[in-house]
Length: 375
Ligand SMILES: [Zn+2]
Image 1 (cartoon, rainbow, N blue to C red):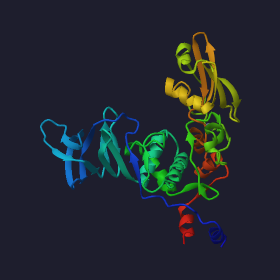
Image 2: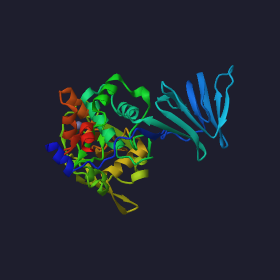
Image 3: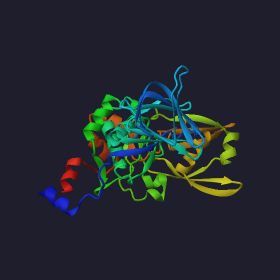
Image 4: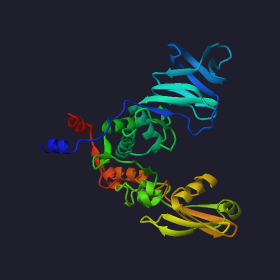
């Protein structure tokens, strides 16, 4: 009865989990005009046809794409503007020098700008399993994998119909079926269609590798664009001590190289609750530039490599002709600490404990609830 009353007062305003997700593949690779594909697979478009085992490639030639065998003693010729391919085992493909990857669902290959574009229309469950595998350490335990799956499901259920997501960390990494282990399959099955809500609305998800002592408030790290996330608070965390990034990472940048980009060492104006610098000032040609700690960290990573300061809790010191960069943790420090989640799971905590710990005030909405409530 109580359940029914609650349902009448606050019906969930959510769409259900979509049946499929559309992903633009090979997002982080330079555009290429050739793609290697491994048979056997089925061509769905331009016309249905089974292609036997072997090595093949798709080559863009003007507005036409050629599908050819890569093996000298075999001939295979098919031309089309667009190919749709599928395989029960997942379709194996390789873009230039990238590692071969295997994808469930349907893969469309077509011309976009002056290069081949590859889009994967994948059943949502396969997508979630692959993202959990692509974003997790192989040693993470079951309950932390369940928490990770719920975060991906929470993001997916908010996607606009027809939305195309990328396969890099701009959204979440998605590297195909070979990152899916039996433990990940078990984790996703156990929490399938569960999502994380705040005031009955799905939350914006953020997570990172290692907080090394505490997470940060989203608005303090990302700025006013992240102001309406009361569940993204400072959470002290000591569960991530097994992470290689718990201890400080110390690296050097040649002062001359550093000053070509930033001129002088920035002054830190403010540290947040988790001791991350959130407001910096630097001077360029005598002009004052205020920037957030996160903006500085992104620029440092882009210019000098992400290994220089893996975490946003960083400090810079000038030593002779080097700038010493010291940081703890890995990633932006907002939301769930993945190594902390794994540490909590290793101590016997369940996925609900983990998610409620890192996202205070949230609740898990289970599909039983949403199904009953929709009637
Ligand atoms: Zn942590």
